[in-house]
Image (tube, rainbow, N blue to C red):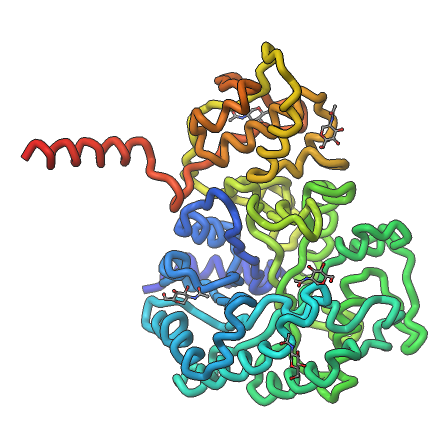
Amino acid sequence: MVNSGYVKWFILFGVLCSCVDGLGVNWGTQATHKLPPGTVVQMLKDNGITKVKLFDADEITMNALAGSGLEVMVAIPNDQLLFMNSYDRAKQWVRRNITRYNFNGGVNIKYVAVGNEPFLTSYNGTFLNTTFPALQNIQNALNEAGVGNNIKATVPLNADVYGSPTDNPYPSFGRFRSDINGLMTQIVQFLDTNKAPFTVNIYPFLSLYGNDDFPFNYAFFDGATPIVDSGTGIQYTNVFDANFDTLVSSLKDVGYGNMPILVGEVGWPTEGDKNGNNGNAFRFYSGLLSRLAANKGTPLRPGYIEVYLFGLLDEDAKSIAPGSFERHWGIFKYDGQPKYAIDLSGQGQNSLPVGAKGVEYLPQKWCMFNPDAKDLSKLSDNINYACTFADCTALGYGSSCNSLDANGNASYAFNMYYQVKNQDELACNFEGLAKVTTQNISQGQCNFIIQIYSYSSSLRPSLAGLAFVLVLTLLAL
Ligand SMILES: *[C@@H]1O[C@H](CO)[C@@H](O)[C@H](O)[C@H]1NC(C)=O
Ligand SMILES: *[C@@H]1O[C@H](CO)[C@@H](O)[C@H](O)[C@H]1NC(C)=O
Ligand SMILES: *[C@@H]1O[C@H](CO)[C@@H](O)[C@H](O)[C@H]1NC(C)=O
Ligand SMILES: *[C@@H]1O[C@H](CO)[C@@H](O)[C@H](O)[C@H]1NC(C)=O
Ligand SMILES: *[C@@H]1O[C@H](CO)[C@@H](O)[C@H](O)[C@H]1NC(C)=O
């Protein structure tokens, strides 16, 4: 029974609000401490997010999504593509991770992401031979299972499949990279046959990162001097449109200029680089979301674009090989709390998004550099050790903790490690260089965090206590 008050409200709102239609986000889980999946699902609903993209098909996550109504893209990681080259394994995967959730009150799966940016040049061709067969097997298995009309397999690709900006000086020059042009053509044909979309990840931040000649304002959606495409005369005012339209041209070049495109990842990080901060992230998302709400599209593809923001939460266990910003893509912090006021509906009525509710934190204890320590010869070794196993990227240039003094640096590193280790006393020693404190030692913009109870990695003290009592009781019997 649908509440009629809600229906009226919805109709009214639907008329008045040109909100972002079906906003999606990426929910990555490479964190040392994960929020309970049920808490995250509630957070998505509280913020009006209706689509979510995962990087696997984790059972606990899927169970939390069951009955939520959220549209889900599940994924097969790159390291499993080779297995999916066996059709039997692909069928088994579809049974275990897709059709199993296909029941009333199950999971509303829409897409299967086959691999994640498998053709990145930095992978040196490792997945070139295995991606297309995996895509075919998964879609064919979906079709054979009778769900292929509603669930489409797609390959999220990085914009580097259509080369660098020097290969494509203007969007209308777009062509797939010459080393993979034949492969891309086959993939696009297969997607078209199965009415599946092309999925691309677009990162204006990365256009700017490490390229000081890049016109700064062109990374955003306001204030840039237009760049004229010499092929079409179209004026481009932002690199997102230019990038997207380069793909449209590349698809046209192989004969599929009208193929549906969805943006699998787009976002802006808040630490780890001079351009990674809340102000720039806010500016980027404000521009992006208001354009999405207005269904503006791009010059070559006006209208609705299906978009998945990257990402929902900070992930402190991601590799920082691509850069220190990699752990700070979240619109929300590690604990599901908002970083800045942004109206996710694209109306520009900026207030803080709704944070995760009922988050449980570890006790109010921090680990700090012990100012009484005498022998400082091992200090840098210990800091390095801490930062190998914990996230110290906020200490770097342009980040929120970059202005700490040497002792502050040591304390920051020691505390991050201590929190990762669930405040284990033994994790705050560092050869006598550290000590535990109950004083909040945060300084200015630099927050010395308290970690959350991880839903999977730690027994709560109360539960551990209960187990202990149980064991004693059993022993007594
Ligand atoms: C698919 O489901 C199986 C069985 O539940 C699970 O072991 C596997 O990790 C899932 N695959 C992915 C990519 O999450
Ligand atoms: C790719 O090759 C480079 C240079 O040979 C190497 O440093 C890098 O580790 C390789 N990457 C992968 C994923 O194999
Ligand atoms: C892919 O297949 C080609 C042709 O069979 C072969 O030369 C190449 O070594 C293979 N690449 C990988 C990474 O297995
Ligand atoms: C603190 O650490 C950061 C990052 O390693 C470094 O750039 C900075 O110079 C350090 N500051 C001091 C005073 O040692
Ligand atoms: C510690 O202090 C900082 C800065 O005042 C604050 O933002 C943070 O919430 C505090 N942490 C805790 C756990 O109270």
